[in-house]
Amino acid sequence: MAFVTTIQRSRFWGGFRVWQRDWDAFRRAWKVELGGYTVEPFVMLVTLGFGLGHYIGDIDGLTYAQFLAPGVVASYAMFHASFDSTFGAYLRMETHNIYESILFTPLEPADIVFGEILWSATRAALAGISVVFAAALFGLVNSPLAVLAIPVAFLTGFMIASIGMNLTAVATTISAMNNFFTLFVLPMFYVSGIFFPIDHLPEVVGRLTVLLPLTPAASLMRELFNGELTPMMFVWVGQMLLYSAIAYWTASHLIRRRLIK
Image (cartoon, rainbow, N blue to C red; front, side, top):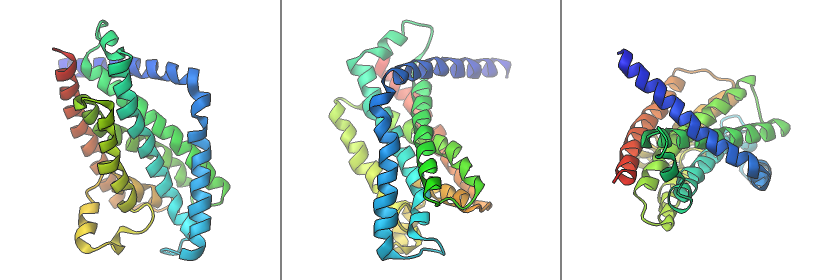
């Protein structure tokens, strides 16, 4: 048991060092990425929340903007984690040869995967902070529990990045990353309860939607924004942790197989 604990501590420390490398790179280039964190959430909430919401009306006792805001937090956490764990990670691995350089240190492929996922989750949390702040400015936050949407954004990013790293591990070209967005990310964005309640979908589609990774994230965000604490929140967190653990394990195996030849 002590041996397993030692390995886990080593993995966390190794992953932190990879995270630190990505953080240092981000600090040098954060100004060119600022618009993606600050402008986009405002545009989404204004154009859809207030513009389109004028024609939609209330949903479950909430204005459309209030219904949309927590879904935007979840979706932007997903998008930022997706881009970094696919395009970003692939470039670091194949173009800049950063992974190869890391392997000359005591770190292992699993450390690289853990660190990259941690960094993608951090970017997701930064996106969550920006959207929660924008929502608060527009008066779309109904409870102080909404601050917990930020750690949920981190967990969302960790889950999505764990899945994304699997594609990065097997992709032969950077163009393959487009499949992750067109076949996985965008369909979830449309049917996971971001724009409308999933119980309005056909029954079969609704049941399948519950299994999508973004659905529990959006549901959890919405409960926190409304200040509701329900037993289902533990189910959603458990679902996200399960997806994260499975995807991390498979990504670690695939990255090792790709890097260690």
